[in-house]
Length: 153
Image (cartoon, rainbow, N blue to C red; front, side, top):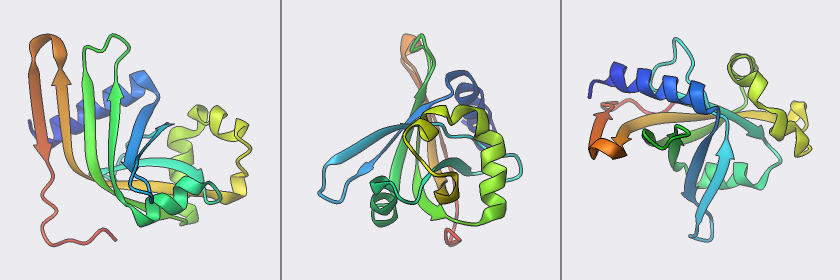
């Protein structure tokens, strides 16, 4: 699967599903899972974005354990996409505004949890691999991103 094709499939599925599951390894070594509302942003190919509060415990956990997997699926379970990558917590106000604009309407649950908009941080996942699974066809397609020696800035 070509990278651009994989990104288009991911974008389409995120637009339909509105939510995805973020997983990583917690500080105690156990798996951690949480529902989130991620988005791709034009002009920032190869990255997946979400927001959270700097005060939530998961933020510190993700900073210490940055390897993550995202999973998104359609309602019929006829397509499932997994995204593997490394996550970075970002506090840049211009990126926060850009991500909030992309995700804005999906953050009702976030604010109902008592999140303070002033504590907002961006979770930026640098995508290493996208895997698309079509269960009824038994079909798996993968796109692997070649970042070369570029660090996650």
